Image (cartoon, rainbow, N blue to C red; front, side, top):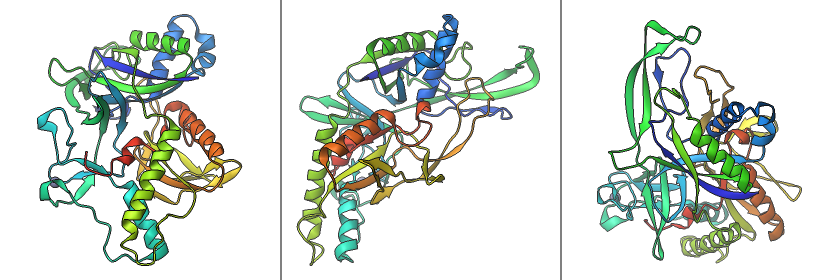
Amino acid sequence: MGAYWLRLTTEEPLIVGQGKADSSFLTTIAYVPGRVLRGAWADWLLAQGKGNDIGSIIERARIWNFFPSREERLTCYTSPFLLSSLTCKREGGFLSEPEPDERGHGVVDVLLPELAYVLLSELYGPAAVPFAPRCNHKGCGERLEMGKGFFTAYRDGQRIRYARSQLSYHAQTKVALSRQRRAAQENMLYTATALVARGHSDQLVFLGRVHGDEETVRELCQAVSNVPIGALRRRGYGKVRAEVIHADGFGSLRTRLQRFNEVFENMWRDLARLFPRATAQPPEGIYFSLDLLAPAVLHQEGISSLVPTLAIGGQQVRPIFWITRPDLASGWSTSWGLAKPTDLAARAGSVYVFRWQGDAGCVIAALEELETRGVGRRCDEGFGECVVCHPFHLEVNEK
Ligand SMILES: [Zn+2]
C-alpha cells in the first residue's frame, strides 16, 4: 500500500457532522473526517450497481482525515496544532506567515524542552527555576497559550514556512423537509452553518492522506468528485473535487526519529546546567513521540483511557510523558439524525512520549505500522490518525 496526499477543493459550501435530530441548528466541524469520504464512496459504488462489493472495495484503502489548508504549490503537510505548540497570548500566530495581517509573535513547540525539564526534575530536582516559557519576541514577555486550529508547512526555497488555516462560516435559515413526505414541514425552521471559502478568489481546500494502491485511490477521487459530501447534499452543499497531489509529507520516519533524539539530547545538555548533580546525557533509550492528528478512542485493559499503550516486539509500552485533553468521538451520520455510539476520545493534537530500550529496527517497523493503521479503536472511521515524531516538535525556537 502506498501513501498518497489528496486535495479536496470545495465547489459549494460544506457542512460536516454534528447535526442532531431534535436540534434546530446544523453546525459543522472544521475538517473532513475520513468516514465522510468513505460514505460518499459507498454511495457512488451503490449508484454504479456495485452494492454487493462495497465492503471489499472500501477495505482496500485507509482514508485519513482532511484538514483545511491554504492553496500552496509546495506543501509539505497540513496538521492540527499540537497541544505542545504554544503562541503569544497577545499576538498569536506564526512569524513566517505569508500574509502580513496574519503574522504573530511566533509559534514554538515546547515538548522537547519540557520533556527534558520534567525528566531532569524527577531525577535530580527540584530545579532552581520553574518551566514557564514566555513570548520571546522583541522583549514581549507575554504568557503563551496553545495554538488552535490547523496549519500548513510549505517549502519556500531552502526554508520551511508555516501558515495558519483560515476558515469562514456562513449561516442560513432553512425550511425543514419532512423525511417521510419530502415536503416542507409547517413552522419547522432550522439554521445551517457551513464552511465557505474566504472572499471570491480564495478556494477552500482540505489536504489529507490515503493509504492504498494507485487504482483504488484514483477510484476514490472519482467517487468523491461525483458525490457531494456532508449534510444537505444536493441542496446546494457539499460538492468537492478530489485529486492526488504531490506533497513532501512528514519525511521518513527514520529521519524524524533520529532528529527527535538529537534535539532532545541538545535540550537535555542545555537544561542540565540548572541541576547541579545532573549527567550530560539523558537516560539511555530511543525516545519517540506519538502525535494525534485526529481524536483517538483508546482503551486500557478494556476501560476507556486518554493514554495509549503500544505493543512493540511483544512488550507493552506505556508513555513516560504526555499532554492530552478529553474529546468525544461521536458517530457521523450521513443522513442527518442517525445515532451512532459516542466514545471518550483523546483530543487531536495530543502528544505522548515513549522511551524504547530495545532494538532500533524492531521499533521502527512497529511505528511505521502504527502510522499506517492508526492507534486505538474505530480507525476505519478516521479516529486514531497519528504521526510519530511530528516534525513541528523540532521547532523549539519561534517560527
Ligand atoms: Zn508576544
